[in-house]
Amino acid sequence: MVKAKTAWRLRQKRLGFRMLMNVVPLDATRVKGSHGCRPASEADWPVLMADSAEALPAGPVESTEVYWALRRLVTGAAGQP
Image (cartoon, rainbow, N blue to C red; front, side):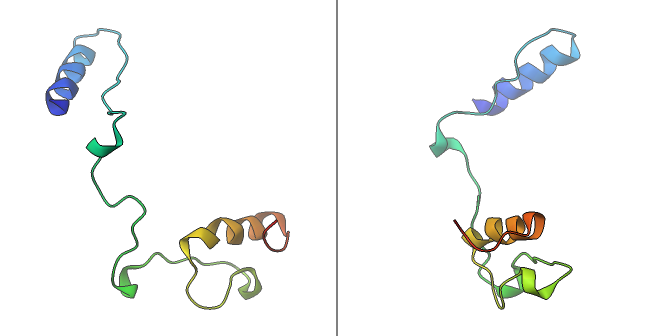
C-alpha cells in the first residue's frame, strides 16, 4: 500500500500538481531497518576521530557517549552535566 501511495504521489508531482508528500507512515511498526543498531563485528563499527587525543575517551566509545565527546570538542567544556 505504501509503495502504491508513493508512486501515485510521484506521478502527481511529475504532472505538476502541488501536494504534500506525506508518504512516511507514522506507525513505527511499519518502519523497517537497523536504526541505531551497532554491527556485530568491531571491524564494521563507526570511527570517531579528533585532532587531539584528550578530546576522546580511550578505547571504544558507547553510542550514548558520542554526543558528549562532540560537545567537548566544540565547546571545550568538560564532562556531562
